[in-house]
Length: 232
Image (cartoon, rainbow, N blue to C red):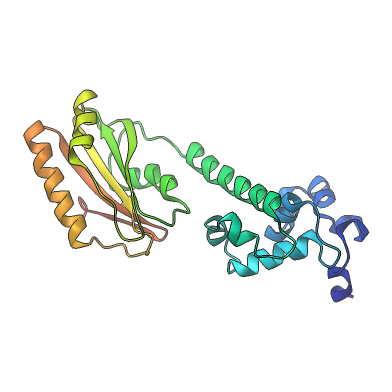
C-alpha cells in the first residue's frame, strides 16, 4: 500500500496526508522536512509526487538541511522533476531561513567574551562553501558599532588588506577590532598564515592605538579564539 501511494499525485492522497492541508490542520511542526519542501515544489511529476521528489533531494543531501542549503540550483535540478523555478524556490526559502537566524539573534550591546562574538558572527558564515573574512569594529565600551566583509576567497584562504581594515576603524574612531573568518574544511585550528596575519594586524593596531581584541575561526562545529588560547 505504501509503495502504491508514493506513485500517486498529492491530490489523490487522503486529505490528512497532503502537506498543505496537513499544515493548516496540524501546524508547521507536524510536517517532515520532505513535506515542507514539497509545499515549495508545489507539484510533482506523473510518476512522483512532490513529497517523493523532496525525499530524493534530501537523500542527495544526506538528509541534512545544512548540506542542502549549500547546493546550487544546478545541483538541485539533478533531481528529475525539479526544474529551475522549483530549485530557485527552495534556495530562496533556505536563504530566508538563514537571514531569519541572523536577525533573531540577540545583539550583544557589549562584547564580554569570545562566546559573545561567536553568537553574533556565526550567522554570517552559515552555509558558506568558501572562506570569508569579516571585521567587527568596537567602541571604547566594547560595543559593536560596525561590521563588514573584508575578503572572500577560496576553500583554503582569503586575501586581507590591513589598510582597508584600519582606514574604516580610524574613520569610526574605533577602540578595538575583532577579526573573524571561517574554515569551510571544518578544521578549527589556525594555519600558519592565520597566525602570521593576526600578528601583523596586531602590530599595525598598536601603532594606531586600536586593539585587536580577538580573532575567531568559525566552523559548523564551533570556534577557535586567539584570545582564549592566549595567542593575542
